[in-house]
Length: 321
Image (cartoon, rainbow, N blue to C red; front, side):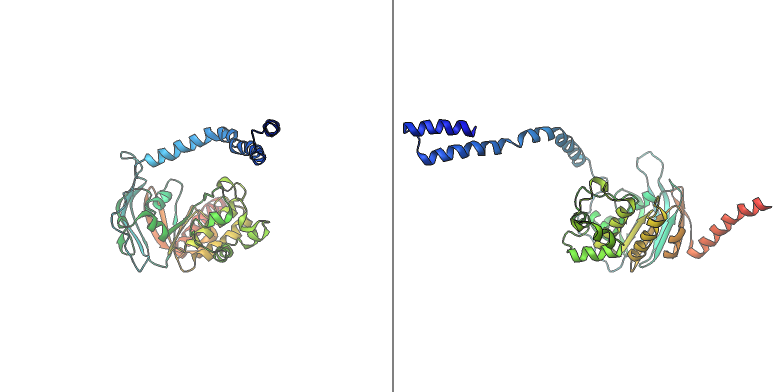
């Protein structure tokens, strides 16, 4: 195209119908025209994926919100005590109750473990506390009903570190800044140290600019959970919920994560969700046992560990006899 434009332009220049500066513009115009249309094939190739994403986004945007936000601003409270009374929750109007009359107390600064098998209602409890699902009964945060709070404000007070935290296809810095968009690198590195990530970050050639991949495919399970802990610490919530923080990890990773969990608990009310306490028992004050959507008992950690030890010893005694 450039050669053709040049040949045609030279002929016109020789005949006197084109000025010399216009010849230069004609050649540059041929180049610029291709710069404008060059991205079109790639855009066409991505059109199907873009439309599929748009359909999912629009479907989500058109879905009625399950929880109605209050009209008034969230209340300002001085404490972070959390109390649940006769809490009930189900996911379908005619379905079974995932939570069926839960009573639970988490005073400010207290650390409580909720222990129970799969299907006991532990994850549903977290969903109700973070205002993701409508519920019946009463939840008060700082002496104020949770219904008076906007969802984002509740989740600013109650940070959840999930068993499988989601990491976006972005840099490590951007994934951490989700909790605090204005955080400086110094603040990010401080919480990374608390979450036992300092050696991991130092080993990365690009540091905080390292791309973690979609859903964290470029990091291990232990690293992903420590990133989630650092993200929660960056938000600096008064209440921290840890959902199975060590489940499915090897012993070495659990040891590192144990230090991160211990650092994250300092100065905060903590709700630890787990199947078995194990070494995490030393980090909590009380244990609530959950079964079939209810809290069946709530005892001091020492009492709970004594019962577990006695229960584990009974089969061995039977076998020996």
